[in-house]
Amino acid sequence: MGLQEIAFGGIYLSPLLIYALIGFVATLVARSLLHWIVGQTALWYEAWFDISLFVILTAATTFIFTILLESP
Image (tube, rainbow, N blue to C red; front, side, top):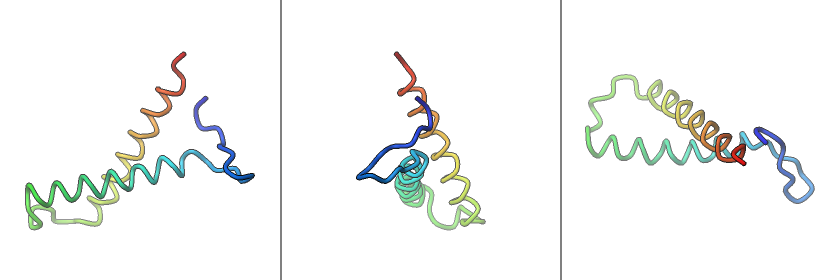
């Protein structure tokens, strides 16, 4: 199955949009937990950290959903 379009109300959406939204929410949760556990002064370059965390979590979400959807 992979990255095929999803028809939603006559509009075709890329599943990567949904994966990016899931990655964004996961990033917000992970960042909140890290700030609560570690503190706000531990991260020097917060913007780079946020973007990196978002990319990693979006890629992980895409990988997991691709594995789940391709299993027979």
